[in-house]
Image 1 (tube, one colour):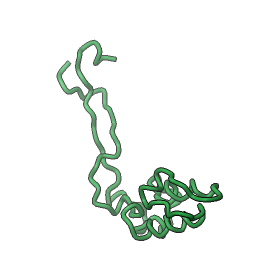
Image 2 (cartoon, one colour):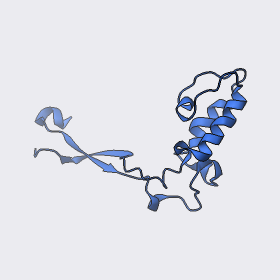
Image 3 (spheres, one colour):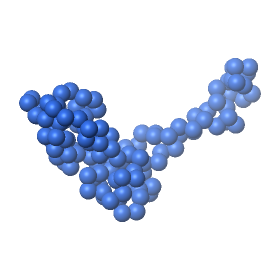
Image 4 (cartoon, one colour):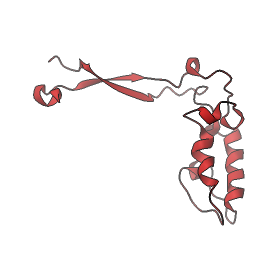
Length: 119
């Protein structure tokens, strides 16, 4: 609330946690073959495959799965899951975030003691 009074913005401190040095012990380069995948907050299997377990019948467009691979015409959800699994094994969406060259900030923390302009 101080920024309302003093018209100053609190600075944002950016920490990047998805770096090689923060990689869990035993982590593999791909989520589909990783022994720590079930406990990883960045698991591609949890994001793309797990939501499809409960679906039956003909597959249709669904986000975010369609970003990894388009839905082939005339396939069931189970078949589409196999297509996605194959895409995660070979494509960029199945790579371990700790092994990637991503340098985008993935955690922003506001610290009230750091102001953009002096108060």
